[in-house]
Amino acid sequence: MRRFDLRSLRFGEGSELERELVVEVAPFHFGGAEYGVAGGQVTLGFMATRVGSRLTLNAELETVLHGPCQRCLEDAHYALVVEGDEYVLEGESEGVEADEEGYVTGHMIDLEVWVRDLIGAELPTKILCRDDCSGLCPVCGQNLNADPDHVHETSTEDAGI
Ligand SMILES: [Zn+2]
Ligand SMILES: [Zn+2]
Image 1 (cartoon, rainbow, N blue to C red):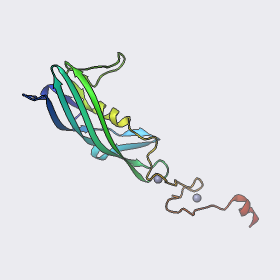
Image 2: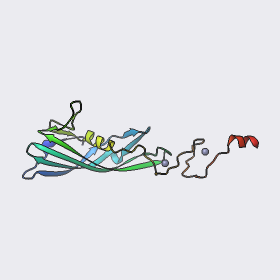
Image 3: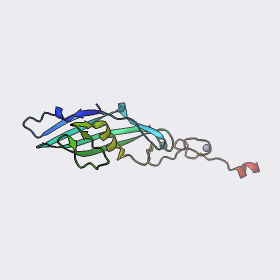
Image 4: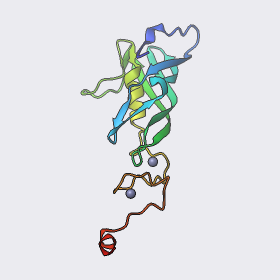
């Protein structure tokens, strides 16, 4: 699912509804690599609270980004828990700056963009296989996690042989 029609919410007598919505998430590109969530989808815990013609939408999700470690290029992952609120009046996002677009227009919420922005706001500056990843040898590219004692003879020593 990419978009969701808020008019399909049937509040009945209640003022609160909860849904689980599966939302597509395209891969993120940063640090020169690509990071995606498993299956390209997340399950969004979506809650809508109604007061008159005003809706408060709350989204919560947990996911794990997968991609290469930015030091050693081995598999790395990063777990995220994100949450956000959106305020809607008569089918339009409220509190949106003039030069921005809200997630809700004409009673349709753009879940794909909302989820992308929520995750994007929580991305780390680097994704590493582990905090103390030693990375690759700058001379030969050997993975230094596998071979921590890896060294090269210096050229001056080489010259003395
Ligand atoms: Zn690493
Ligand atoms: Zn080396």
